[in-house]
Amino acid sequence: MSATAGHADGVKSPAERLGVQPGMVVMEMGYDDDCDEELRDSVVDRCGSELVDEDSDEVVDVILFWWRDGDGDLVDALMEALGPLTDNGVVWLLTPKSGRDRHVEPSDISESAPPAGLQQTTSISAARDWAGARLVAPKAARSKR
Image 1: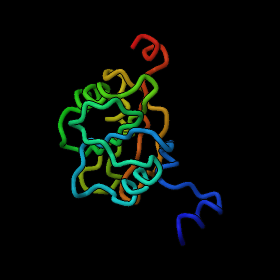
Image 2: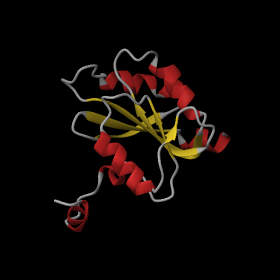
Image 3: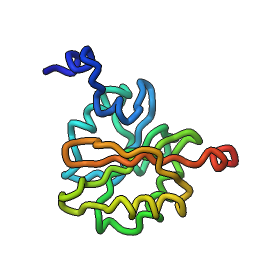
Image 4: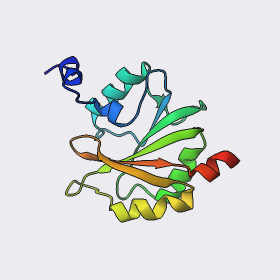
């Protein structure tokens, strides 16, 4: 089935499920060879440009943040991710699904987001092997940034 046929049936692409819109600037953090290429390609197709590298100084609308158990301190990593993010930006924390190598417990995410200044709003199945947690700055915090 082509992507066009899927859209005609009301099926959203992976990028649409992440809320990526044409013209958005999307940064990728934590990329490795285990990342889901279909998801990445969908995001590039939807936003209309290549993903911005985590070393860039561009301001971005969305961050795709690939995170695995053992990658380090999640609170510190999330705080670092906030730097290039617009006030209304979104961090999609992508973690291996339950039963996959280096799975991250949902409680680790829910406990790490608030100290980093974020709150989790949604969880989705982002790709075959990856879960996605949508993290945003609380509205009160956004107005102070």
